[in-house]
Length: 599
Ligand code: GCB
Image (cartoon, rainbow, N blue to C red; front, side, top):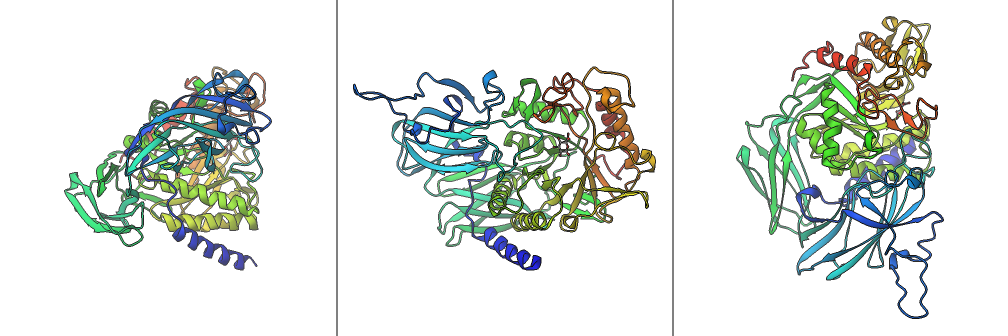
């Protein structure tokens, strides 16, 4: 039965990977666009009545007998991008429906197409333009677009969104998760202009890991045969190709001058793709990535992952990060710690973060929020996961900094879960085989008889790198002294300890042996103990302490200590360094694991 299910799912995976059109254009920030960011008017729709009353029509009482019981005029105004929770005290805990409305002016011209592009709306939304339904999207952390060429009017237009952050069992993430459920239009909104036929998608990478060859797969917006030019001026590369009747083409260019991207040398090349009257360009880097036994090789050399995680949150502002300067703050702190990698917890974060990390030479691990509690037996949920994964890959597959696609976080093995995740993995690999796939598990168990940690999860055989979250000394006591805790997990493969740590309130000192002291000393000792234990993990390929900053979470209800904050940050909610920060910084500075850490 399981075999049959797997075969069926793989057939469906195959079709999915080949038959779907791109979901949105590649590299939106490299296009011609106007920003629709700014102040939007909003209606808080607690009882979800807006669709019945057609808020999208933006009706006005004109005639003597007209009567309208809502209005965007004079309503509360919120910043876009921005979560609603941090913009008004009454909205701090709001989980419900919010209607957003704004007017904007357009000058239409012949032979131009217009698209509304949303970089991220949390969690579900329906989009209406000039009173008409345009489309809908589910998932907070990936972009989507709708063509509105015909719906737009010359002059004034009214754009309206129904946004809901209501948690549901079939959603991703589902009912509970250890971060704030920020709602709203949390990322940029763009009105993009393109020619009638434009370069819609491209994937630029080394050809099968050959450091002297670049493969470009591309597609035009229509099923047309056209000449497309790809240029990388700094490498003196220029090639032309004609698309097939589906508007698709592929070419390979060779050069022996390609400088490879790495944390020590984040080299990027301006890449220009043009066809007819459309040109799009951006900086792209090249690197090889592979696994050799228990080691991860970047450009053929072993690279130990000195990682840190953060949420897409600015703790000092108690809100979602959404700008380039927010990205600078978060990544600047990761770099100050000495990290060469960031695990973007637990969802695709905005493009400012991903692109800046690449320019700074920071390796990335990206994942979709398949985080505990997912309804794995629900076919709808599986489809959503595939869609989200596809959107993530589609947005960031040209970012060489992204070295790991994370499959899921802390999901317990079961027939339904295994089939679900295997299916997502198979589809993802068909779209992108230039990255390492990793799963973060939390089912490693101490075997007292053998005196070591073991783990039984069939998915560890399917991924390239295995990762384990393990909170020894916090949620679970140490089974033995750290120096005596041995590991036999995913033997023969690279293993990353993707989460470990404990909570501490900045400024609380003493009682370094007592978890409930919430002291910096306890947290720092935990870090030292883990580092001691890591020496016993032969296949250790990286570590990622949990987490860079204290972050907001409704899970955390210890008064005086947590008050709605997860306090596992190495930095406080004000960005102040706890003792544990220094332990990790020193470890990363002199990290003796892995042969060559200087690159
Ligand atoms: C975990 C989760 C992470 C939580 C963390 C914690 O295992 O992956 O999202 O925030 O533990 O603090 O408990």
